[in-house]
Image (cartoon, rainbow, N blue to C red; front, side, top):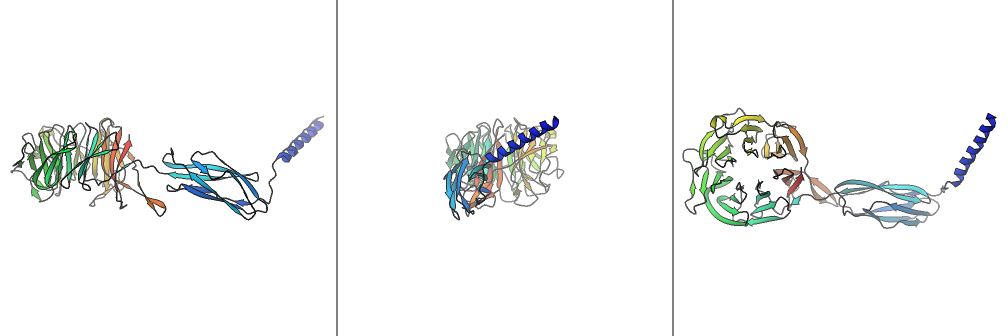
Length: 456
């Protein structure tokens, strides 16, 4: 009985297999064709061609199925005679296509034989704001949430509000060399060679222009309507202190104390003092100046002389209680001398060479982050590393690195990407956005400066 059942099962199984083979489409062995395995759209390509060649002994009938809304075909069906070929145009619709590399397939049926071609699309969307100017110096008002920078070509003050892509301008009479904005964000003072310009950032107008007896390397605008100019030239010199309440005979300086040319200064949050980072001497130091009575008077320098690297520039924490120096040394500050400029830690290097200076720094207390632009090596001019380095502002530990959008330059029908070299970085008031001023490194573009806005 078991043998009979097995025999019946065998007969049924064999019948089923034979039935399947009868219903299966028969592909003519004389159908031979060729198509590419893939089709790749570069950033510049919008139309590419697929060639279907009949290399067999009979005519080919084909149908094409496309499920991608960003791809359009010039035809969806056709016939290719023996020894002939057909061309099909594939077009890309980049509307609503995000930035990046994408893949999909289009499906063919050749005389009932299935095949497919992989379609690759490389899409680039310019996120940064390309500037119609260069950038000489920049500051950010967290009270007004606007970025202020000066340019030489053309000579002007440029104002970009946080939520806008439109830049407003104030034309200048002289080539700018530096800028400082007031703590309330209402006004700014621009340094030149032999002049300074006082501007109203609200009305976008020049208030006044003053003569000054130096080339302004750096400038600080006090809350007392005085401007403090740090000269570029002469090894031993003075801070020029210009009382902008006076129209003439308004330049003064402290005769008792000289500074080194190249010193860079920043006013503390109290508005009473300026801290200056010395350049051009070894070891570099940090000096403190009292401006409460108008003229900047040096009161003392740091208690360290070569113990820690300062390296010629400085930035304040948002709360105003710490200084971060170009040499990555952190100092705690106070109005009490024996507690002022006291060592408070070191920001560790993250560059491969291990000797990177800080070329720019911004602090966001809302995010507890330090945003750094770093250079590598000891060489001058510094080689700025593309990217923004993020550190924990409490323990000074490295957290992550933000990559910057590259500059794309068309070249012989293709294109080349150039690194974005960062010069300034600022966080907005809420700490939700970064503004990074970048330059296309080595690209030689007519418009090589841009502002990148990065969500945090």
